[in-house]
Image (cartoon, rainbow, N blue to C red; front, side):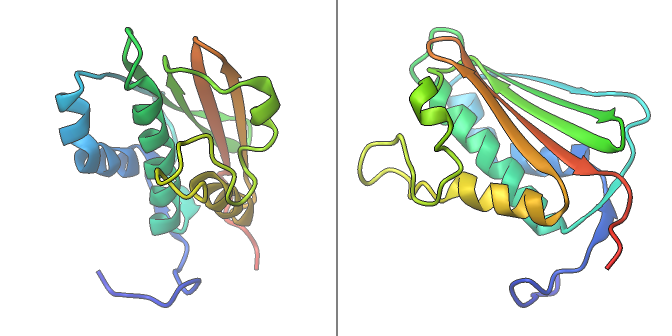
Length: 164
């Protein structure tokens, strides 16, 4: 792969499912070691979309790493990944059966440097960077969570190629 300057990466048409495959390969050791069940579903006819591939891969990696962390101490260790078309968007849903995020923290999770992790674990930059990447693609990222039940992130990315 050719190394590119930060921000220079070109938009290419790529499959989100393929990017998720790569991320799960990167994380497969952790998934197996911790005995986490991964439920994956890609709806039929889900289109490839225009994206900066490395950036979107970083978002998926971040969301799935967070999900792995949140199920570490759960009795039920499951991570769901669902990819489907939703109107003019591709919707990627990452859900987990982890510890959940308290309501008072939920509105801050996309702030830079905000972290619910103990000092020394994680910078808290992951979600704010993911948020910026998704926004720069003209998409949005949403989060719902219930303490003790788990968390669901939805990433919506436009299917149409952006002008400009």
